[in-house]
Amino acid sequence: MSHSNERELQLLRKHLLALVSEESPIAGRSINDLFLQADCDTGVLRLFDDEDQEISHVPVFAWAETGSAEVPSEEAVETLRELVTRLEQKGFWDRDCFARPFSIELVRPDFTVIEELLFLDEDLIKLDAPLLEGLNEELDKFLGELLADLK
Image (cartoon, rainbow, N blue to C red; front, top):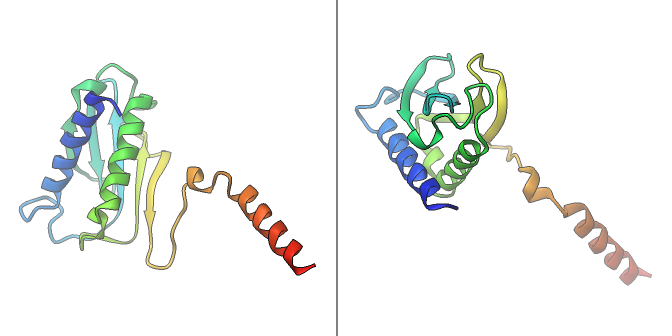
């Protein structure tokens, strides 16, 4: 993680914390879907609710002219992944304003999905591909050892 990436993470974390404060535009509401648009042409991150209404926006100057709204830069996408993951680890998405099922999606201006960053439900946990990598081999090895012991 680069130092500049860390600055963007802190900026975005503070913005999201302000977003859930008592005087915020989402106070007292329940949101099931949070849509993020990373416009890497202008360097602005826009946040939208379930009804595709803009909740807020924040300038991220390091992203300016590194991509577009249609195709955000890999740095922007990676920063958003890291932000969502860190906030999930700290229980940020457990607040009352984020109703279950809850998802966060990175979208284009026409709201077509680029990537689903998070999905939470009371009864369902969606596992990300990197977490599942190598699982097949581990299960095969485990089953092979288990069956060998039974012989």
